[in-house]
Image (cartoon, rainbow, N blue to C red; front, side, top):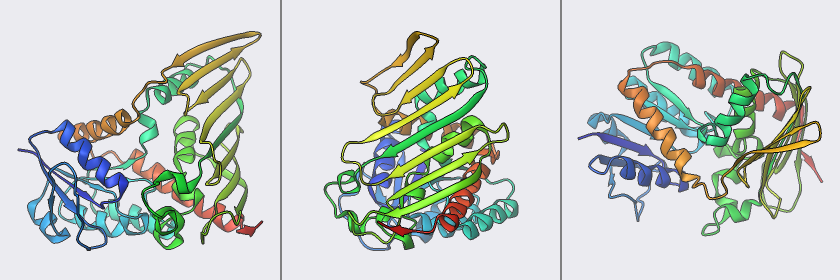
Length: 324
């Protein structure tokens, strides 16, 4: 009987437990509270255990879904015992921790580790990657990526002001919490360099972190990427447009569509408004299980995630927080 663990019982941790039960109905599921406080209503018939008990059981793999500031501590405990770890995004909360993560993986080179950037597992994301790789668009000159959603609406059953997203000490703020955009842009276009950053505090929310961030980045082919992230838009928005020599590609992650504009022709390449976004989380867990079974110690995704954290640290330093 397989055994799986989840550290952290926030909304994403509970989602992973439920999804693990769906994928592995007969598995033993082990849940660890990241805060060490007793938790109620643990889903999926999971068993509450301490971190020490989890390590002693040696599960097949563990999802680290604690606050980002605790990821390094929890992952180090797992890798030291040879337990594969799927770490939720962002990898960690600072560039120093990112460096320590890299040293950790060097210390345990046979470790099986990956990062939970789930948007990569969307069918639409896979299609965008294929289109870019095919060179159909021609040279890409500019990319405009934007995401915005009103933070109090994210988890309406809880106070957003005490959430991880709202607290700098736990790895909150728009840059870290909305780092999916920085991840998928580097996945699609290669490593990015920061050219400009501006971080703002709108005053609309009671936060000690940025709720608006605007970045300009560039890859080695001199493609300019304009990135907007915010916690304040009342109507959710998540879009990315690629402006290239042969065409323009528009990816709407909310409508779940991909549109190609070639000359005067518009082609709807993908349209699946009914797609259940939980499927990308299931796909991510399945992919990591295959990685575990194959004893695949490739750290490409992990290294990219560490680079994203360092990029965010640069953006925080360069784009000092402003009050509007």
